[in-house]
Image 1: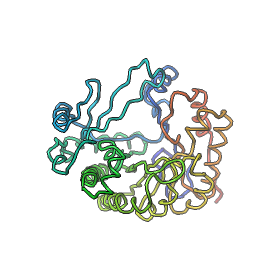
Image 2: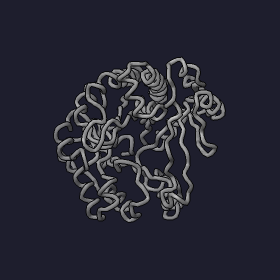
Image 3: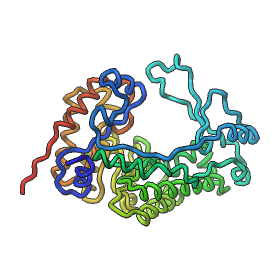
Image 4: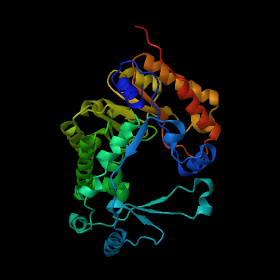
Length: 365
């Protein structure tokens, strides 16, 4: 049974052979992986189950820099100006050490005063067919490997909007009802609908949506605010997937933190998989026990606790918890709850790989 067949069985609760597995790594750990395995491709190094596909982004940083200057924001020369004007700066490598991959987020639209200013910006054309022309062939190659093709849209609506505007300004916009942040949310909603449909037409097996809306304790906004500003827009993206898919397509939704208060509503919207299920604030036994018949799970191995500070035995125990829930009818893909940072010992990375690979399900009947 190949990875795609096994994942389909897992999601359909039809006796999978093993645990699907994903292993996102930060660049410093990719460097270590290359030394250990001879490749920078984790899928090849560890025979993982998933490959992600993304649009090709055609960038116009100079247009954005000029437009930013007109509204009073001057991007540092060292900054990267990406699609839709998303801007990050790079601190000196010496100041970051082993965490050289970290960047400083800038908010170039924090000084915008009106929707009219937004409309004059050089917004990239997300309907450009050249951005998605490669997707069918890429998905075909992934399926030829026997793997699961995942369409990446993890920053779907909210995150990119506040990255540009600043989270505090976005909340003020909502309170003032000035339309600025709603314009940004609508722009990213339409962009996500276009890409989600493209993923479905290309034959992706999973469309991975998401926006971080939780803190370690609770929602980072009131549930009422989420329902007013984000839920209807997320519904539009999910409805676009359902209207376009021509075969089983699972919708995954990512949010860090504790989002238990909106989990029933995510299920209502049609989310099939919750990611990452942080054990530090979303207790695995509680959440999986309550919702295993309504939604699948992807993650569950803590990158705040178990991976950096646990022993190989602790990691194996966390994997066994997932396997035991699968035996009780849950659908679980094992993965770290975020990209693995360089403070995680390589022995623990190997321990996670070995623990997942050791699981084989034996079903009676």
